[in-house]
Amino acid sequence: MENFCESGIIASRKENFGFIRRNSSTLDIFFHVSEILEGDKNDYKPGTCVEYVVSKDVTSGRMLAKQLKLAPPGSVSQFEVSKNYLIGHVVKIDSSSGSSMLVRYVDGNKPKLLCCADGSLLKPGAFVHFRVQTDIKAEKTSLISGAKPHTYQKATEFIIIEDTDILPKREALEVAILKLVQDYKEEIQNFKSL
Image (cartoon, rainbow, N blue to C red; front, side, top):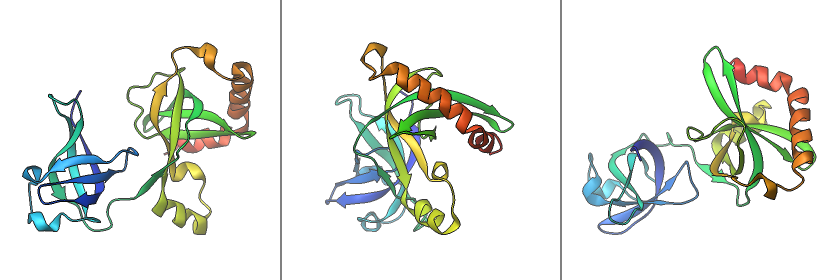
């Protein structure tokens, strides 16, 4: 697994270690103070915005935060991730600015479409369990501006469904997905123009 950069907010801190509330997951990530690259170690307290590299520990197999740096105060958006998993269908939309992986799903009787927060390992056509990640700061702003949910919500924490026979009412889901394409042609055009 390759290392990758993330940002988050320190959730708790002891003398030599702590945990960071990640933007990309519901699970906090461990850090050791020896991984702090800049600033005073005492500056790394709960509520502090940080940037770091996610790395897998070779002995335990757990994810760790390494190469911690202070991020500007308020620069890290705080995300809330839904507790329940939903079922969706992965699609790829090509646009002038590149391609995007999206998840189509049905929420109640309403078809919806979300960008993937971390969809690099997903293949178009796959059925997945996923959670909805909401940017709290952007959601509050959108209530004033009237922005659509796709501007502050993303699909995250994917589990690929290998056995499609377990999908509840698979035919109904596929019909809803086809209806989604028809109902959201304008929405798809918005994603293409990003």
